[in-house]
Length: 111
DNA sequence: CGTGTGACACGTA
DNA sequence: TTACGTGCCACAC
Image 1 (cartoon, chains in turn yellow, orange, blue):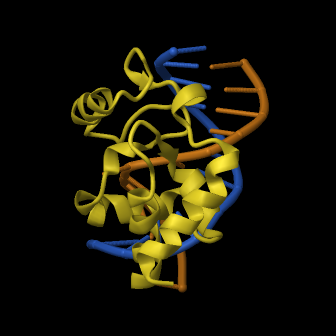
Image 2 (cartoon, rainbow, N blue to C red):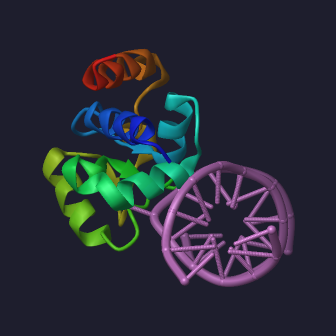
């Protein structure tokens, strides 16, 4: 784990637009390195500084141990929910917007 | 240096 | 849908 990776993960999370979400694996893929678990590691140690609730598991369930809090914040933003989990069909960042997302994430890192 | 663990993902049952 | 096993990468012991 290096600070650069941490910065990139946090930037990517900040670049997630309200009402939308991204999975751990999706972020890892966006950065082109590491894996879902590395992203999870970063979030568990530095996630408090970013909209962590917009990062959910691949099945739409929010972060372990923060389900209630995350669901509340997500509903506040109008994120499409399906019971106790996010409706990925409507909340997931569309492939068409991945490039834009990446651009915003990179811009935040200063690169 | 081996083993256990985790804010994960995916296939199978 | 949930439960398990396996793969994954990095960290704590």
